[in-house]
Image: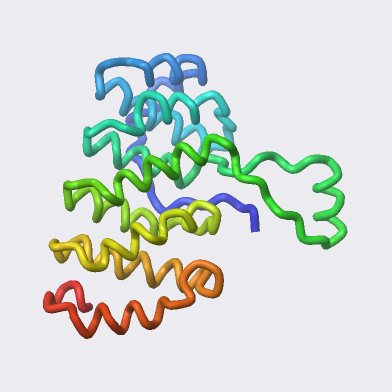
Amino acid sequence: SIESYCTFTLASDVTAGGLPSEQDIAKDLESSDNNVKKHALKAAIMAMLGGEAMPRILMQVIRFCINSDDKQLKKLCMLYWEVVPKYQPLTSEELLAQASGQPVARKLLPEMILVCNALMNDLNHPNEYVRGSMLRFLCKVKDEEILGPLIPSIKACLTHRHSYVRKNAALAVFHAHKLHGDHLLPDGPELMAQFIASETDMAARR
């Protein structure tokens, strides 16, 4: 399935007076003021949920937002990754093949390589909140091409010193195995059995 999906709602205050144009959003994302960036990113998310493509915004988010340490901006980036198109548009030949019932392999946008690198950096971040939040976000990601490179880092988080990270790593492992177990996590059941046997924190065991 190539349908888009999201798992959140945003306050409507950002739409007061109408959404800014793609050009204005792109310019605001370059601001040194994180509050301006956050408002612009909210506007981009709202526009995309309303059906706007916003192709220029992806690279702006990668350049000016993805490496921010601002927690709210990081969270908005995660929401943005949920709704942004991650694959190249199908060609006319591929559309015809799909219409005739033939399976068509989707091609990930080249920019998604940079996004995956940023996600991996957060999975290895020294702050447990950042790690745990990223692991929770990955429980919403369905794309095998994005989850695949992150599996080693997700596994490593199962033995993190902080129970918040371990708990969310277990949820991410369960999610990835449920969707792509044979390809990404064939050892998923064994990993979870080992985790439950060695985990001492009751909240994480749940």
